[in-house]
Image (tube, rainbow, N blue to C red):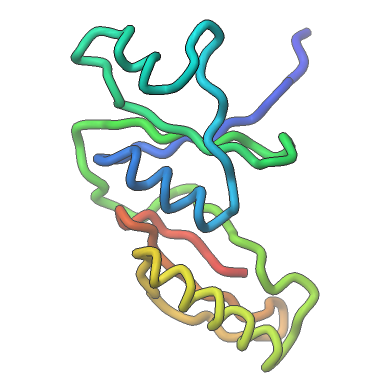
Length: 144
């Protein structure tokens, strides 16, 4: 039986470069190195057929841990709520007003990058507060 070596999270999008740039900035991720034999991604793009140039971008955690994020162009637009979303964990271990202040500060930073604030889910008996947001193409994510 094969063992899982890596996990990649793939985003379908209209503008992969724009969405990849957004998520790299949000998470502090890097551009992965180009494929072996190419000095840059531009060199790689020039080597593929014109119809396949620049259709995808990626983001990797600088330490090499965590899943790789992959952004691929698709012809159809987003029409319904995501069935899977990322939780950006900025308030881990914080509660009450301290947590809300941290979430609001990160929300302001992400809105400056093009994110949209959707709604605040306030704390209840089971969960701490979180903010529902959308990325630059309307994909939902949570500040948690």
